Amino acid sequence: MTRLLLIEGNIAERRARAKSLGIRTSSEIYALSIKAHFPEIAIDVVNAADPDWAIPDGRGFGDYAGFVVSGSALHAYDTDFAVTNQIDLLKQAAEAGLPVFGSCWGLQIAAMAGGGAVRYHPKGKEVGFARKIMPTEAGKSHPMFAHKPPVFDAPCIHYDEVLRLPEGSTLLASNAHSEIQAAVIPLGKTQVWAVQYHPEYDLQQVLAVYSLYADDMVGPDFFADRAELDAYCEKLRTLIAHPGDAGAAWQLGIDADVLDDRTRRGEIISWIETQVLGEAG
Image (cartoon, rainbow, N blue to C red):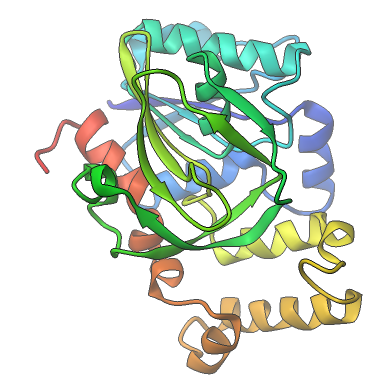
């Protein structure tokens, strides 16, 4: 059986808060997104931000065909255990030769693990949807984007950005907000495929983000007041309940690159197909 090891990037307190609000954790939404397309793949979750973390059932890296890093509310440049342990675990997986995929936090800790740099984004946060992501020349021919259109939007939430990629990395995609939206990072005996956005998110998770970060969403960069945010979220609920509602999709500026599950999750699918299962492109 093909088995993946998935890092839950958030600390226990954060996971408990999500559960109390009826919101899925980062690892839960990731596991669901993978299982939707590869139901035969087994997934183990490790809470690597916890002091008592452990790989389930006493397994080692040799029991896994790949390593996945989910999102996190932590900052990759901090030096507390919850951060450094995840970076160390990623390095160990890389030294074991496991193919790695990471979203958002995954990109940032891979950059740190390889000697790059991460900082608080001077342009501010990118929340909800990263717009008009465009592959670089290297990205246009890379299998990561085999299931994506030439330019696309993607669910996202990040306050930090990768300032500098490690030596030998390949930049695969950018947009107006963040130059480094996707990259391949050499690490140990493997390569990390990573993106700054969240291809694993569905619209329900985007709605949850707006709920969790409502106070941050009200201001000059996003919504003028809470009523405007609530109206936007109500349109999102309409589209979630009725995915074929063309009017709601148009009002929200959401197209098939986000609405179609296979297109939205294309990077994850391509990684599993080519790096984990070894299927020809």
